[in-house]
Length: 175
Image 1 (cartoon, rainbow, N blue to C red):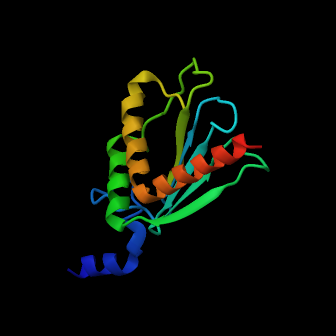
Image 2 (cartoon, one colour; image 1 turned 45 degrees about the horizontal axis):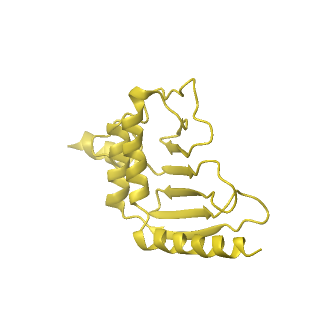
Image 3 (cartoon, rainbow, N blue to C red; image 1 turned 90 degrees about the vertical axis):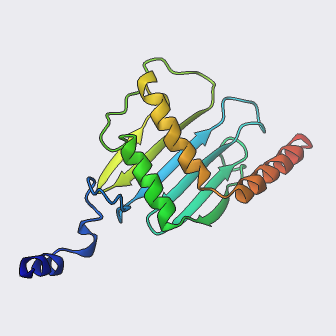
């Protein structure tokens, strides 16, 4: 008992949560997810891009560009909350899909002109970058992670951004 009490007093509270092998799947304090989706090559104003950023403090943001990024393209930013349970589930999914232990490999042949997506994740002082076009044997696992990240953005926010994009396209065509 005395040894257990000393262990609890000496170890920082977050040291257990920071362990990548933690079976409780508690999200690490340095958790940061940056997922980006980029539409395929299309003439303006049909191209669009967005980036979803989620951190360990239960905050999420989506940055949306209704055209190719540039000085004349607006950047729309929306904030949203992510519950601790949602964070833990996302982190667990990433662990289950071996995001932190897999060597993510890019295909040698890239699709030119098509839409693509990729993700950067920081956890437990480790930075993971998954390339846009992974080898076929990794594709399904990363797609599940992408779906889980996108699902954290409230539907109302995505609908609002899409409506803004429609208005942007109408105004752009009138130029």
